[in-house]
Structure formats: C-alpha cells, structure tokens
Image 1 (cartoon, rainbow, N blue to C red):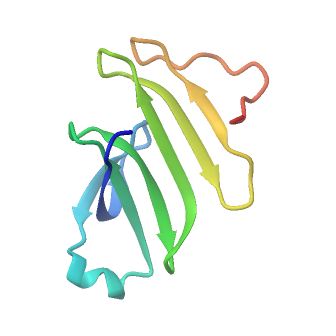
Image 2: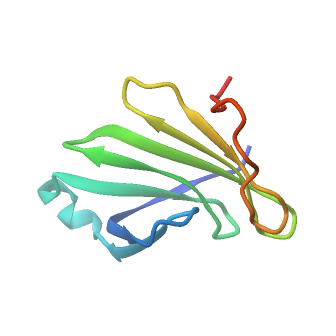
Length: 105
C-alpha cells in the first residue's frame, strides 16, 4: 500500500478533476480553520484524493486513480450520508459516458 501524506489547503482552483489546491495552511494555523481541505499526496507527489473538513469532520471526499500515462482513470466522490459516485476516464482524460449513474461498490 502506498504511503499518503496530508497537506492542508484553504481552497482549490477550477472545476476539473483532479482538483488543484491553492493556499497551504501551516500546521500551526489549523486550529483556527472551520473549513479546510486535507489533500492526500502519494510518494510520487501525485494527488491521490482529498477530504473537505468542516469543523474537523469530513463532509466530502475524492479519491483518484491514474492511468500509466498520468491521466486520471477513476474518481470516486463521496458526500456525507450519500452513496459514492464513480467517474471513469479514458487514457486521453475524456470521461466515459455514464449510462446508469455508477456508484462505488
């Protein structure tokens, strides 16, 4: 299993997946944050996912898998109290059409 490192951020930019995080939060300032993102990075520096933390509780999470060429292959998106949604992408980064609203199994 790959070791993941969490770095905290204030926000992200854009709407494309995977998210791009901006404005790092130093560990000393975390106690003052009501909402932040714990971005999970693999040893190779690639974003493996993130949790949106609201008052310390995860409200939203994304988990990412990649093709060998570095393009996003799979995104699993979960919201508190809802079933996860899975989005699949081809090796060029184009999203496969959703036929039945895939959910995580």
